[in-house]
Image (cartoon, rainbow, N blue to C red):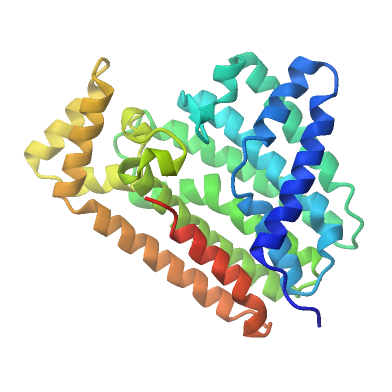
Length: 330
């Protein structure tokens, strides 16, 4: 049995392939449709989701090179969602560069994003594997669930009665299913058993939930230069994050009134709002509570991967990737 490939090797493989595809796309007409895609794909990033797919394929000694187009499909789809998310969230910065809708226009970002979603399927359908129909069905299921999660996220903007369980379901759809789907697609392309493929999916769900809770924390408490996007965006947008929902549930009367006042205000100084809400979170020790919940979900993920019927040595790269995700710069 060949040795497992490293995260670094797979990141390089994906990065080289993305660069080659972006160069081809950037030279395609109409330029105003395809240049923003080139710009997006060249923004960088850790390429975590395609690496997850390839690591899962390699875990079961599958043909990583044959699975590469599926990994590219996942990355292109993920970046398409970011184009549209940035418009809906009014986010101006992505990976320390102007978001596509700010560099070009909203209309351009919408149409280029649409093209990316279609291109993702074009890459996926070049994979030659007996399980490609099942992989494509999973990809489609994942894609529509991501849209459902985004809709719930938008619905929550106008609701004050969102429960923590509803929030966790929203982030399962918006974030975790793409991570889980990437792992399971790779497992299927690696000829894993249905049981092991499902375990890897559940591993991805729990890791994805833990990842999003960590992301919520970083949005408030991170160093902006290390995080790669503007801090406090969730607070400015009144996003119903775990932190805000927990604050509304546990705040005293004065804290709750202050939170509600900031939520209701139409005009405010952004830095003042961020600092005021952040101080309430600190007073309520929500950084610790949120981190504890994230850690619990991470442990559930580890239990799933422990149960997979593969020698533990071959699991180390996936475990290392999970650890890397959970120890991002703050």
